[in-house]
Length: 323
Image (tube, rainbow, N blue to C red; front, side, top):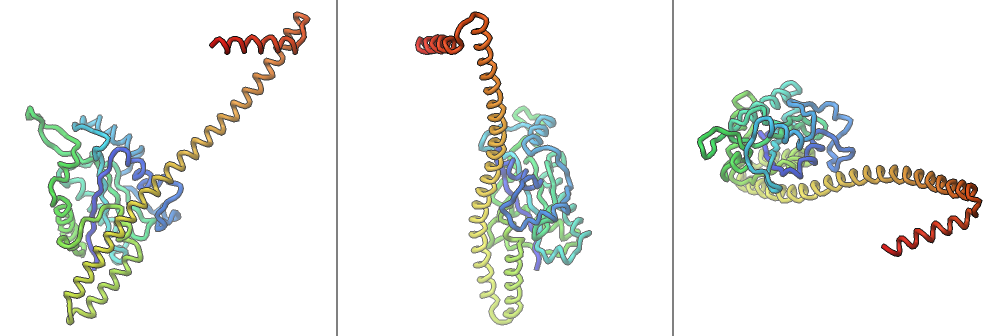
């Protein structure tokens, strides 16, 4: 049993560098050991970005004159991760996998009348255990201002309006992909809480897929005995999984942020070392220049070089004392 999976996460401006470096594979090292860097060449973009997410946000905001107050705590971008399980992609093959992700991209372009111009990046990752698509976009709503004039406004809370917004997203996505020929199931909306983007890493890796295989096997074995027991066990496993996934996400974000800051500190440290070397060279040159100056002045006035140094040092000491 394979599921149509789509999940959203909202990000503030300060978080954009981290998701940019992860999605566009700009990091040197990754805390996620499922990433096989030798397979990163198989990743591809449905919509390419040639700058950072922060710069792209500012360019799009200016180009389309987007309204809305942007504060430090404002969610300025959203990220949808679209996937299923490993068995599904192995079963349908490369060509249908590409069609699945292109359909997903088209779905997001038209969702809530978003528009392709507000999608910042769409990247398919094939270098992890399970293929998945990252779509990063600015949550723009098309509305009117107080004067009745039509405007485009950055408003995450309005784009995802209401407690049912994510359930509606999943319902519509499920209908869209199944209407287009993909044989997938819709997840249990009643008993499962929403799983944010980073937690999908746990859904799609090998160990959890094996867990689902075992669960499916048990259900087939006992379907005629006590299906309620199986359902309850399944719910318990999912609830436990969600709890563990939350912890994993918090730790992963801390690790990636720490690694990014470490890289920045290393770069700054290297720059300071180079500047320090240059300063040392300049100091040696200056000392040599001053020494030669003392020597020439002492010869010019037939005055002891060491005595001249003492007089100059005494004069400088007096000036510092006055200050």
